[in-house]
Image (cartoon, rainbow, N blue to C red; front, side, top):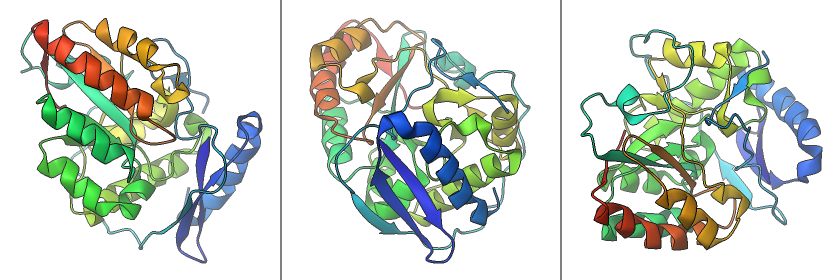
Length: 282
């Protein structure tokens, strides 16, 4: 499982591995670290209500460090009305979407190995997706942020450091995570995202309010193959293969080895298109 900690003195973000059994301890440590950037019990964000730990997935060893420049001040767009829940269906986000539309969302990157492989699968199958980008990853891989946009996909803000449990942060900490991610994505060469997804789908009134205050629509999902847990290519394929019109699908390009996700999408995307479903970016 990966987590990020920030150091205000050094101006860097460090990606380290940790034992999932120590998640609460690491969350408290991460909160103290992010406090230097100026940082309520909630409900979970997939329909199942299960809080997921994708970026904090178990792994061995330290991945490395990424120097993150001081965030650019990004003017917040006009606030959107605060919802009582994130959007779980396509037409809550895209009322203009065709009746046959489904949406593929890909979280926790960009990753220098898995994001290019997934982009190639999407290109071959003529699928436009929405990438939920972690700000620290955008700062480390700005060329991939630009490539994602250049290839016709859209971006979603997925916080700066993917802290968990996210809803337990203070309102100021929650807003800082969102605002710094916006800055990192803009610094990487993209427009500020208009969508926000909470880490692990961990929603609360404070999270929803912060997102709307920054002009972002909160985005959930309703098809979760739990690919972050690496359940096997066939399990992921079967889960995604049950998608119906209007569904928002969840997959991952960051947080660990995503070979199963790549293999499953290679199989299931042409199957879904053959059923008459059309993929749209959100």
